Length: 467
Image (tube, rainbow, N blue to C red; front, top):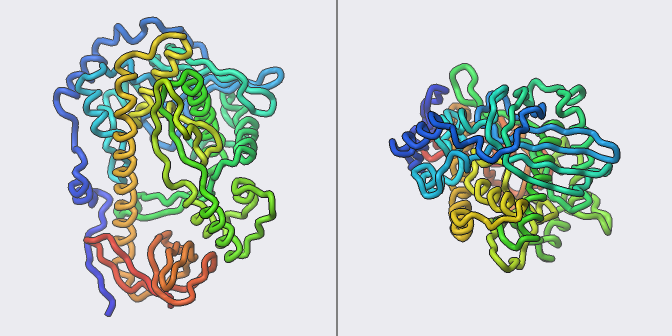
């Protein structure tokens, strides 16, 4: 018998139970808000000892509607290469070490994004106001200056505190990658070069589209959004900066890295077997990165292989060091050492790693408050990452259950992503639901018909069997 538990799917709410289940904070403590309001009302110290870089025509580039703007960029073509100016919001200018905002940020770890609103890392008066690199507003920032040669390789990097003023707020939906804003006119060329270098480095980048939740006609619905070229190019600038920061910290033997060990021989052997089973030719001497770059994302076997390669990205974490380098300093998914420094509004670790880089670049000691926090940060960030992943999955599962609640017994087309014995992970074509399916002979990387057998909205579960 088909089983279904019904529930209201309303874009006006619906996630309150999930927020309560994960004990997500609804607001900030009055002491946190008071400190934030105080620093905003008295900004006299924000401009101290800062270079004036307000003449740089920086722009921000984010998803539509973003308010917590961490980065602003200007890319210049130069004889023999490129010059990238990358301004990052300077949260340390607003957050007193050990104060209420700092303590609460350590508790939260990062901003959580839910369909009905965020759970911000910092009070909105900062994250969406005084600290955000909003257009035509003078803001304290950490300004990276990155020199690259004609091939897109980094040749020199510096970082300093500055005052900046973004001239425009661009978004991925309206910016034309064929005719980008003058401040990022060189982004297509540089972004393409950096992506080619990523493949040569061995970066593992499964081209899985994002499943997104949106409101439609009063209900929450799922959609599928492939990553655009503009997003991919822009991400390369952030990765470039993170790699420059990691190199600075490694050279100084102090810092906080995002690390991922290289996959072992057994995992790579398993992946080669998965490719054979999917009918994907993997020539000898071809790296995982090169193989991924040559696949057609529109093909179901490619989608299944992308899912298989995510196994190579398991085990990422944060590694801190002070005086002696750790055994692993690279991130296998990026193919180089890497550090989080470009999203301090939304992620706790970036504020501290940035402070290390500023001190190293200036030839000064790392501030005691930043140095003391290094050993604590991996645990805080790992716990925060786990919570963020659980919340994101719960939101997707909830919307899937809402959308399918009255469709038990119907048949859908799906791609088999990963199969084991008599069960498989599948992705429906429409709506883009990812779920488990029961049945025999479930072929990975193939399209099959599946029947929805059960929906439990309260438990956020849907069940399928092969039709």
